[in-house]
Image (cartoon, rainbow, N blue to C red; front, side, top):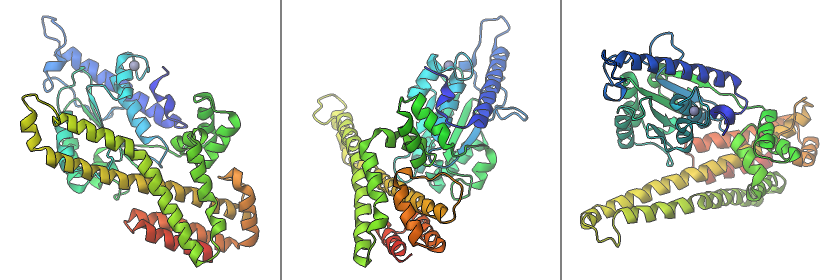
Length: 421
Ligand SMILES: [Zn+2]
């Protein structure tokens, strides 16, 4: 297994920063161990002594601190960076060798002292956050660090954010908080949390770096890797999916065929319906298996068909728990639909951007190399201003959906704007 930061594509500065932090963390830990060794030399008492003699992790001037925010555009590797850093902190041999048990279990998500919060719905609730913060405050069982990784920290509710803030303001001595958000804008993360964290800003990885990873690590043919990296616009996961999954390619092709179909008002509404329904179908296929598995697991846990001693008592709360599960699954399905729709809109924006660069003869590489012909004929037909208005209509649609405009209404308005130009 290669070292833990190898999946963080095109981010040499961030990797350097995190490695130095992990090395500093190890120094802090070793100092704490040395201090807590009993005078008679009976050995370290780290596991039993969370308060006494443990230096403050947030110590001034250190490369290490107790709270971090990873920011960057979607696909830049925020959660990959957080996970790799967590592994580096738990590494038994250095700063993320990728081979020891600490690295291995962290990356696999099974390390006892590393918890990942991956909100599947639209937000993380306060109850969940309080429980997590409480657990994160316990003494690390492996004697190193308790790490709480919160992916999509921008989806925290205000109350959950406050519960987290309290923990970050008065951090337990061996707890490290890793938050991932698109940016440090107050819409994404509260100013007070931001002020307590060190920010690691990831950039959109260059297409060449993404293509190189697909080629060298995933064994994808060089020409496919180059095409997928460009089409995915710096989103590593998306590039990998486009290169490997024929269904994902088909969906993208259907989206890129839309601009040509907008020949009248009726066609615009048809196109909007097609886009919405495709997003719904994609989302449904993504969550259906997880939904069924979770329901089965919960039913088993609740003792359906069980005869054990706890079974009858458990069933009393069963209806409520099933209802709660259904609510969370519905919320996850909504999120999956929005994500699918957003991917389609990003593809569409890439097309209009290509048309615009052709109109302006801008010396930049196109996003969608495989539909360059279509972009060329559009560039010959439309004015640059008209193309820019279309690009703005797509971006406006994304913003509208983000601010909770009903997706169908936002997409219909966008299609009409794309047709009128
Ligand atoms: Zn290791």
